[in-house]
Length: 356
Image (cartoon, rainbow, N blue to C red; front, side, top):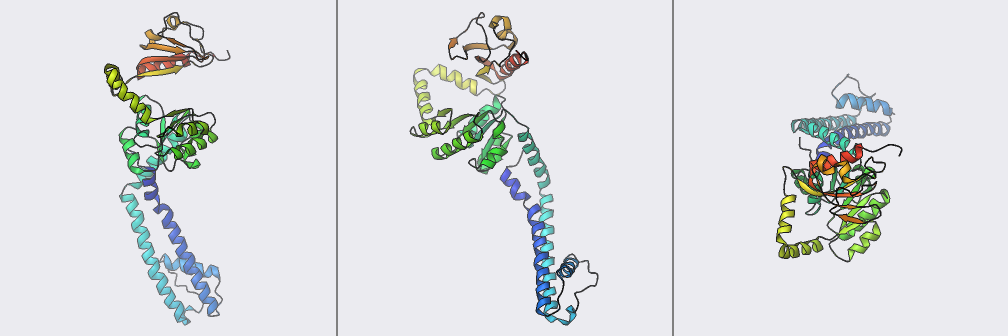
């Protein structure tokens, strides 16, 4: 079932809040009017009696009870006529509004929205993409294709609908610079955060806010202008990406190495069995620690091609052989289908040795 944008849900769910509030306000106003009339005419009507009379009149119960001496006060009778006409109009509006909610299927959408928020609350080690514009929507799509849990944050409905069409299922509609919105997206439990707002100054503030909320978060930020990169890094971003710089590098690659770029494009556009160059981190206390690639049987068990490894100290080994030793914290850079990458992650995690 397609999940409606949060803003749409809020607008359609509004009658469940406005109708009771309108009815309560009407009763209060009418009761206070009777009480003031009683004081003005020297009748001294009790406030509770005024409320009681208003309720049985508005809700057409009519126990044939009136306030003492009301039939002798013409203005009170005229006021009662106004109250009854207004109450009937209010009840008609309330009834039509509630019926419209059910007829238009809003209850189903309400349940769908609550189910989505429960799914977000249950996430951990997920990725948050703030800003689902021309750049952010592709970030969210790639994370989804590679089977990473992702939550989008966007305040424009048309962008949310586009992201939904591209496969994004979990999102929060709202201002990404609002801390409560980031909390709703699960920023305290997230593993990664992408700042893709249109303006660099907004990304600087967003990165600063995200870093203060979750100091352990890995943050990647978008920078349109070269001068904004240092500001984003000082605000707390781990990596700053410039679409203009990357676009220029891509154009140069198309000129001098067209077959390489064609290969990468074909890999990224494959949908049935997506293939990627991925990285897998060997966790601490893993049973593969100090074992060779051949002993573990990485290629044989997963079907992946190991392109390189990066040790915890930062040294690289390209095209490692079967005798290359693995260790805790090492990053494996592999090429293969996403399903095989997931298999490798399970292989190294399932073999973790507790207490070592």
